[in-house]
Amino acid sequence: MTLWIITLTAAYLLGSIPFGYLLVRFVQQEDVRDTGSGNIGATNVARAGGTTLGLFTLLLDALKGFVAAFLAMQFAPNTANGPSTLAIAAAVAAVVGHIFPVWLRFRGGKGIATALGVFIALVPMVAFSSVGVFALIVAITRLVSLGSILAAVSIPFLAILLVPHRSPALLVGLSFISLLSIVKHHANIVRLLKGTETRFGSKNSDSTDKKVNA
Image 1 (cartoon, one colour):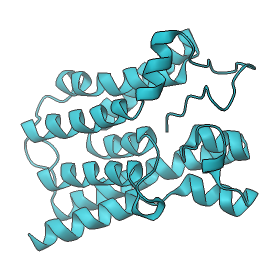
Image 2: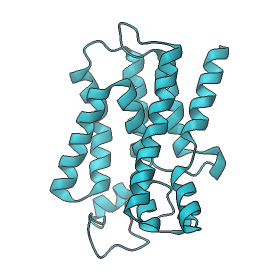
Image 3: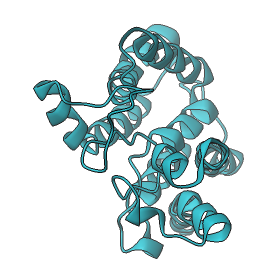
């Protein structure tokens, strides 16, 4: 029980590090939450501080998810049915930390980048396949939000197809993370249904019509 408490607390706190907020505050001396949608994810960071800061945010948010799950796997190694329950729980805790960071009054990002990091640690083939889904959708539609949502939707199905030995806990954990990320895209989903979501590269975007997906 002590191991679980320490591991999940550490995973949550690691996941809750608001790299996007910190990078923009340090480099631009601005609060990224005052820009665009107010989100701390990579897309909004790119708006506030440029593409380089956005990429750094994406990488760091993914890295913290990977590290949280990877460290848990060292304490509770994989079993014959895949990642241990502790590692799966730590992955969930890291994503929850990113979406609801204690440092920012529980108002964080949408979890896509951090989820990618934990997926790479737990089920790398599934993670990279979901990136393919994302890239394909964005290439066809230029809708980053749609690519993120469909990539999240694909995760449980890809796990069924690509992970022959999997525990029910793994599918539940992956599905929960995916569902949480999708729910955080509720505003994007409304705009997609209305046909008003901004497309990647569009010159007509404004602060009330943004698609923040990391």
